[in-house]
Amino acid sequence: MREVMIVAFDNAVRMVGAQSFEEGMRQAKTVLENVSSWALFANNFIQPIETVQDLRETLDSRMSIPEREQALLLFALENLPEILREGVTTLKKKVVSSLGPRPGGRKRAFTAQESQEVLDYVSKVNREGASMPAAKRRAAQKYHCSPRTVDRLWKNREFIAKEEPPTIQELISMVLKAGEADGWRVPA
Image (cartoon, rainbow, N blue to C red; front, side, top):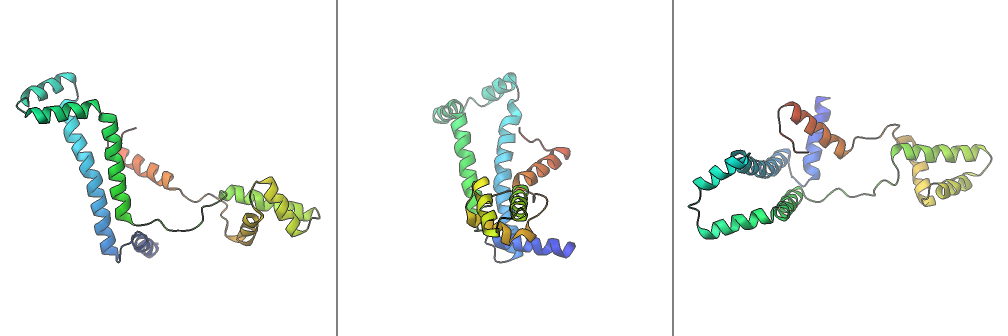
């Protein structure tokens, strides 16, 4: 299993455009440093002002800030939601551009369970006496897809999993739960 994981890691870093495992790890470290630098900035900014009194004391201790910087801070506070949106969007663009293009390929028309339902329906109609092409056409009509989609499902039926493959959202949820268990403060 260890070697399978190593091959999977190596393939993953190459899929995002790295020429070698080492280069991929350097890219991943850069992405994570970008993300963590934003988190650190937010933590350092918010930590000293968790209460209104903390904010008053912080402002009193820093009122020697030049007027232009005070105006910028006030502008930032008045436009905070838009600044956060723009900051997250910029960070996302930076992360996405560092990963390279997504792998190509057709999006799945059906989940594994839906695919199984379509295949079961084709088999049932065929057993009831319809020809295979007719059974596939009827399945396409019933499941609102093209006959070609049903043909593809039928052709690849042995590879259709009985259970849904893991999703990116499922993985992210797992990582966040593990992080919370380790004491990370994950925003809702």
